[in-house]
Length: 62
Image (cartoon, rainbow, N blue to C red; front, top):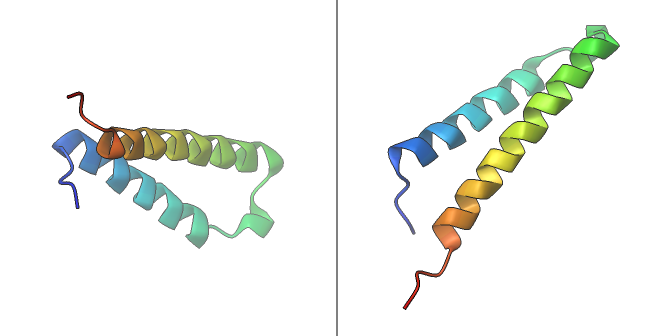
């Protein structure tokens, strides 16, 4: 298993926090505009986490 850099760890921590907040939110009472913002925030976090995955799993040059 690879060790994450402090920046990578922070990225993953923020994503986990945002996901936990989204799961805790009562989506039935959130208006459409806020739902769109929530989805966009989660999409951005997913992109950031996938970049971390790419960094961690990249094969170092020979």
